[in-house]
Amino acid sequence: MTLRDFSLMLVVCLLWAAHTVVSKIVVSDMAIPPLFYAAIRYGIVAMLALPWLLPMPRPTWRILLVGS
Image (cartoon, rainbow, N blue to C red; front, side):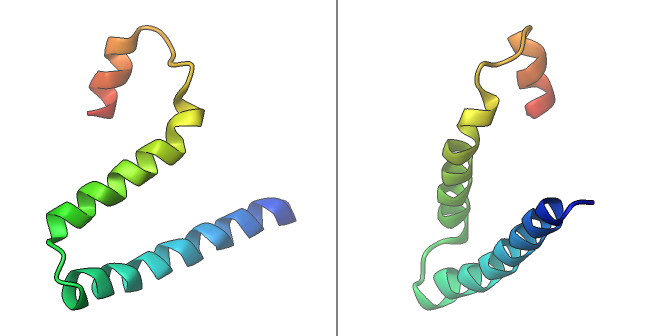
């Protein structure tokens, strides 16, 4: 494992841990419904992941079936 791989793994772990704290604050202190917060979170992640998903491999129906 290279230093770059280890650094990326560390950043992902830190973001995941920070997300737990942010989720607790948003849902309990800001009184935002958990399902609404989850929908917004998944929408943001989908938009950020979109460059890695395009161009979509063929056949599209298999990719959508596995993804769902």
